Length: 305
View 1 (cartoon, rainbow, N blue to C red):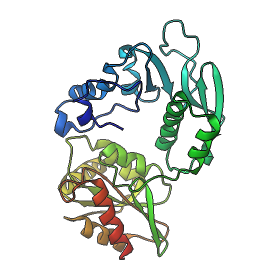
View 2 (view 1 turned 90 degrees about the horizontal axis):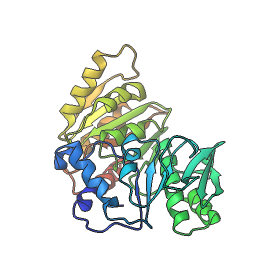
View 3 (view 1 turned 30 degrees about the vertical axis):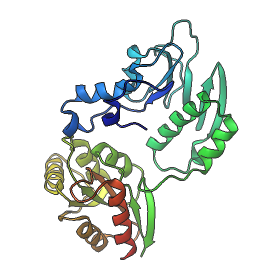
């Protein structure tokens, strides 16, 4: 994975490259969405006719890059690959992956390969089903057989700080999604769970919109603990969303300064059956070196409860 910061410096492109999504992020660094998009698209800028670009059919930002693809164009998404989407000149079928009857299917060189049932995927959330679709295409294009892809997809349970279950204590499950450094990723994390959520949100703002995160927190969270530099911003955005909402599950917001205080506050309001979810929506740089250090600290604090 290459960040937009790295891509700004790139003067070569990989033979096979993917843009999984193209939505606002890092605007504190890039300044405008146009500049951020330009940085992301550089991963394709130096490809040639024999290279492959994989785009998402479900994300408009990624999908709209299609006219700039210089080599073979491949897609991944929930729907079948047929339809009104651009293909390479002379191509009658698309390379890519999609969902059919609850299963991940990869199409390559005119052949379809059923990889796995979606309920075999151990990673949580619809966004991770999308990630599996993309990874399956990339692996297949690189030469991995369908059985090998199946084995990895159905056994991989994730890595640290990405919706990682830390512990269950007195009927409350504590999850670490410190990697959620943008409000959009907090939204994806909240949508994973049906149980009441005590959300830990904050950190350092990246000049992104918190509107959707505030709206979804009213639908999914029972309580929000706002912390870090962005605590006041989070509280303000949720309060604004409340003014425009008739029904909500939210019973309150607690504002604190540090992650340690946030964990303590969350433990006080959590009830059996709740999910305590660290999905900050901001970066860690107000208090930590990176999201991993923040996640490690969260896990230490949770284990000490």
